[in-house]
Length: 291
Image 1 (cartoon, rainbow, N blue to C red):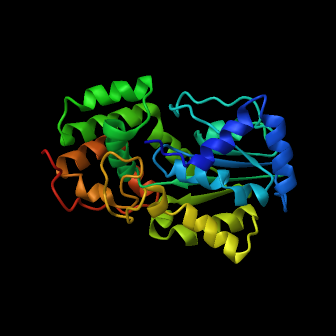
Image 2 (image 1 turned 30 degrees about the horizontal axis):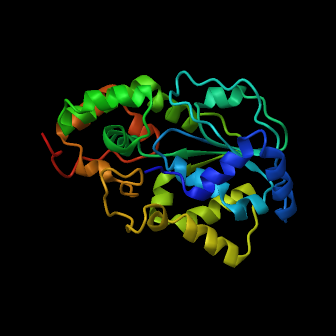
């Protein structure tokens, strides 16, 4: 099942089809009640940081009405190989830009603009990548290669494989590049853990940063339409569905899957990354299944 809600598919389809695009923009402009003060918004992240949640939010009709910005998703998989040399089209939101900070810094940007980066505990990234690559991620050559490898491994060896693989992608380097970048008044770092703890409170802080103003009823509707329960078709946050793109929606799940051996392998590959990103170095609580 696709991770994208129907409204997201419809908005993106209309915005990118040459024959439909003029009619879509004309209709959109008639509905816009407030335009964003920014030419572009840049949503930067790594994979497995609720990127499809953000894509759904920015494709929501109420967001388009109050920004006049079209979502412009970036779908390339690799971080180390990512190159964006052309500026975003004006009046767009660059959704889930999977790029490191040097790539972002080199991207031509029209003033005024605003950016944010979504950070997640890298140990949770590993677990999320494992289940996604093993069961739910949309098929592409890289994912198919990973899935074939994971089918031959138990969970312990599979998690170690994922640690090595996403290190190869440049995921951990990309995270560190954002956290240790020089201060920039255009950029704010948001943490996935805050989103997992309280979707609505996180959304309110994000809209405040992006200077998007909604009436209380509009905000409540936006939060409700993009709640974990709605996007997962009725499951409560924390209720796991292994084969769903919206698998669990919680922070700290790595403790249920890392054992001492996996934690040692993670440390050997990433060094002191956990501490440098501002997370606590903790011992795993349980032994990984399949070990």
